[in-house]
Length: 302
Image (cartoon, rainbow, N blue to C red; front, side, top):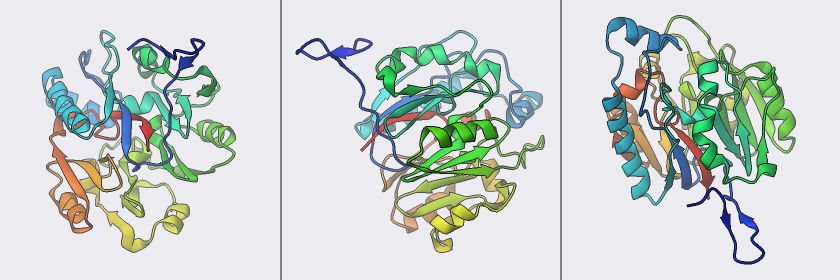
């Protein structure tokens, strides 16, 4: 496929028809991380630092194997899977953070960690397929990463974290005046067991009315979440489950959810509610402080 396809009449470019309004509509196209070249072992977050110090840092081979299994699940469900081009020495696993789609607009993330900014050229061949008029960039003082941005139809939740600041939230709010945009302050700590790196580490909607939530991950009670999601529709996880990244599943549709296969309690709870669960091994990726949602950048949901 060329960078931009052209129609037969008048050679007008045919761009990707971006469409993402929530976390659960049927997935049509996604950018999936690669992990081809992890580079040096990183201390970019408390979890990565811990595994570096403990000698349990994941290998490139294990990371790639897990992502490959995830890719097979995506393709088996008819999803068009795009991949970043490898850049030597860069992790390129967690594509969620470097850009994200809201409705038909692609937001180029402005990341707190400079090394993450270096990943942007790796998806240039994909973003070249997007109408430039539908691409927006945050101002220099605004940091916002895709892991902190969760969509729920007319609502956008923006986590205020070590990676996304208030200016980033204000940028999203100003850019999408037709949406109700909510700032959700998160717990930020050097203690890896308490730190919430991104909003999707502590909260994620599933299906049409449910949500997975770690209630102690918020710096203050997020009343808007409790207004939108009933108590009986929340799958609440404890700190140990949050540390294993229970909330960071990935929805293929309102009924189909990809889950780390060791999350037995969550899998049982989801099946009890009628969800179809697709189990994959993603334990090595979790050592980098990310999981399934983190590894994906949805472009089209229908």
